[in-house]
Length: 228
Image 1 (spheres, rainbow, N blue to C red):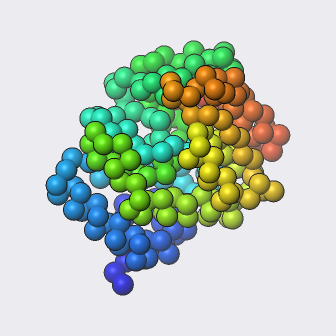
Image 2: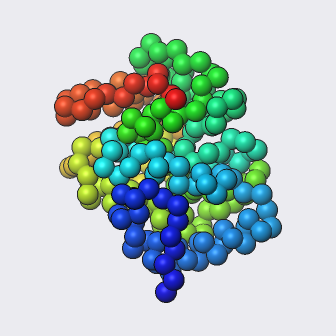
């Protein structure tokens, strides 16, 4: 079997080596090569594992789990809910910032949709599927990414302690079964999209609750206003 060597940060590469050496990941790589031959896909290849580079395995404090990357031009750059600098905030991110303002009184400008500052503080911004075909949501679902990201979550659950998992929306909440709740903290809410935010995402206070958990464990809280 040929080992797949993706462009991924060293600590994550060590943890996930069995996945990169697996048959399923080889099939996933073949699928992606063919997809990129025929279609425009997001994010750019260099950004597929951006979340792993910004937040090494032993630096993870908080996990926010998204679905698949943004599928419009110029939006996806490898961090869930985040967009590159200069790109308008998508509606879900606008609602995340609204909840932060309500919860913590922090007014984050809607021109600051890049969340690299969160990632660099230990907020692991993971999508369950790491690539997508342009303008076709969920088009890369069911081809192996979910197996890979389930392994990511299991490894975090098994090898780390005291992490805070923020699971928003039914697909993310379904991943709770992968997490050892005797070792970690799991906070759930509806998805922040305009279709569901008013069903309980607004008012969930996950940002202050996360910081209270971190502080109780002797860890530095997240500066949610520091997005870059």
